Image (cartoon, rainbow, N blue to C red; front, side):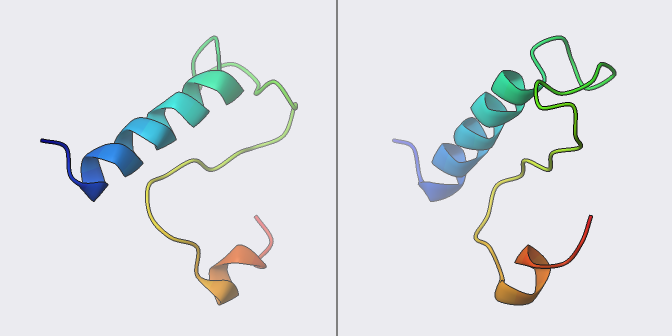
Length: 50
């Protein structure tokens, strides 16, 4: 049975595939860098500029 980390990893992979359909060596669909990783947002890191 899948646990929370399996779900988070799968969701982040799906997001990355949607944003970078041709792989991360090509520009994203929004033509801006996007970070997609499993986990919860932290208030201070969420508002930090990229």
